[in-house]
Image (cartoon, rainbow, N blue to C red; front, side):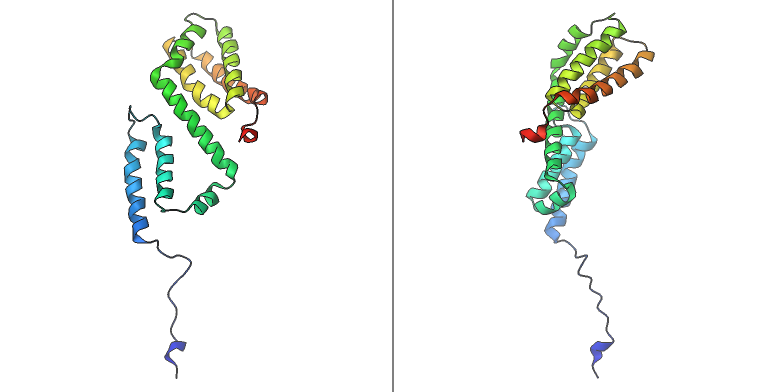
Length: 186
């Protein structure tokens, strides 16, 4: 009699464990990037989103995950282009905010005691121009904190805030009709 007829195969080939070096490199990358995500560093201009993308880049470079797995997770190639574009705009936004380059311009465009309807008109024009140059998401990411800080600094009335933020979002969606689609450029 054959003794192998009653034995059961306990190995499962679909869930294989990764090699030890991948686990170690993945953990090292995670713990290297974690402080940049949790603690804001003044001299690290990329922010937490940049830290996460650097961590993902390190995971691919150290072959913890393969490029094909990345494309499988991301899906379409245009999604990767969008991620890179938004990340680049966020880096530019954090640089502008850190260097206070836009504050001087905002002081001239939104002086103290400016009537609210002029706030809306000027914000709409600025938002339309920025959306035509970038994307509506990037425009909102850049302009919202800047406008909110300016609104708080001027101690404006709270009832104006909802209208101001709705105008920012609405104008960004309307203004995107004026821009060249960035997929055509790439």
